[in-house]
Image (cartoon, rainbow, N blue to C red; front, side, top):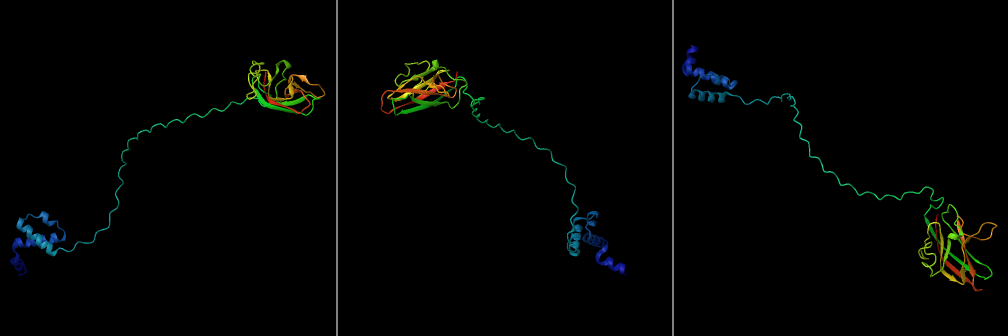
Length: 229
């Protein structure tokens, strides 16, 4: 009796479609497997939509896949340009061994001198001290006194300078006069302990001797230069 009731409302084809629709609603795989015409497929889709439930919640995320292979190395960058070289530094002045001990041969040192004399009874003495000593004193034949106005005239070869720019040839001592009021220059000489004044210079200096011309106060001044032999 039950079998008859199932066949009557659906028929054989209707029963198959209903079953397929039920399976499609549950899994969706029977629709693709069944051989149905277009009308039957539409009917199955209609029934499956009616009885299909709502979509379930999303499942948990799957495990992460393996890391991909390393990419290829990039191409090398372009070389930078060379920087500009800086300007060379100024070369320092070379030192001279033993320069402060004695004046090197051919080197010149200069200075000034002055004297004031109150009496005509004594010779005026103007001491000259060499900042850098000579290796040896200079003989009297190489010592010269150049009066004002005689620069370039007297002993021009040995004393080519002036009172403003004192100079001396190698191995010579030159004293230049700028002022000589009442005093007459004499030969420069040196004074040694317990010895009279002698001509020439010592290794450390000299004494300029000026004779007084009157009883009045007299003054004299000038410059000097010495060049080591």
